[in-house]
Image (cartoon, rainbow, N blue to C red):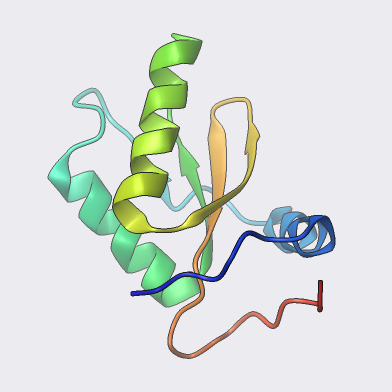
Length: 102
């Protein structure tokens, strides 16, 4: 599935405001980033377009690698990372979120 080009700052700000009230829909467990977790993220992105993923890893470098892997595997765009929570956006076929022009 093709993703949109890089998001503009205006679009990122819009998505951040949309994500503010969201709760993380995927939480990585002790096994880390497994195929099952990636499948869960894929499903959540397809359904919601904008999601939060919580990565309770203490090591910042490991957490950054996990975030990068999620983006690479799902084709989603990282909107923001706040502590241990990554905000991802990937438009679905239904285009539930209308981004401002950028």
